[in-house]
Image (cartoon, protein in one colour):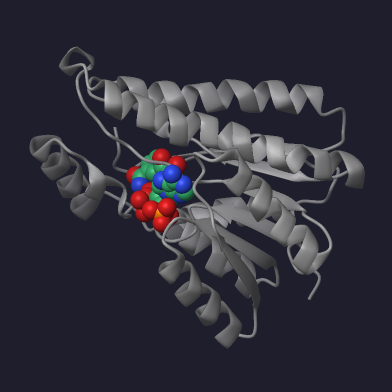
Length: 246
Ligand code: NDP
């Protein structure tokens, strides 16, 4: 089954739900060996079992992207189990929406730690392997929040835009050694809003999730598209949102 994905080793952060889980399933169905990271290891175990029951290959490790050493562990597992790392998908993320003048400093710090520093730690863990191999692919999950700036999403959008900036610099620095893809989803039906503290914002987002949001499979297909291209072809930025999203 030569499809540009079969046999590739793909590490995914935030694989325990939503976009990460859907992506792991799709890539495994297409023959990738997926290495799953997140904090809820019971969910990772269940996903890994599901993939194996389908005849796929999966391994998992508890990965909190706030810890540099956990990202190193994720990459090490890929290399130890499967002998290489072809792709890292920096997907783990969280959103704690609020007005900036609500001064939710803890929420800001958590978004910066997970959405920005977590991505940087993933890049830091993968690049030495990619450099040694002379190839690799970094896929960063960003957001349409970083494209259309609206109130309540300032710091979240800021973290996602910072990832966009990092991705573009990394692309230019690659000199053909690795590919970089940034994917910006719009509203997607996931658990992202479940952890929000402000009940009004949480309810508004939950309503959008019900009425507007698209399936995480749509994002998984975009990830697969970027991976399956020939090595000489780099897919840069992809924006995927519900047709009805403003
Ligand atoms: P989910 O809440 O369903 O998934 C988020 C994932 O991130 C979970 O697997 C969670 O796993 C993981 N995660 C959160 N914090 C950490 C952490 N500290 N360390 C490791 N993993 C962590 O939401 P989505 O699937 O929607 O989110 C995936 C990505 O998509 C995020 O980057 C998000 O910002 C982005 N996105 C989502 C949109 C949407 O509308 N849903 C729109 C645009 C972008 P666990 O708790 O087990 O650690």
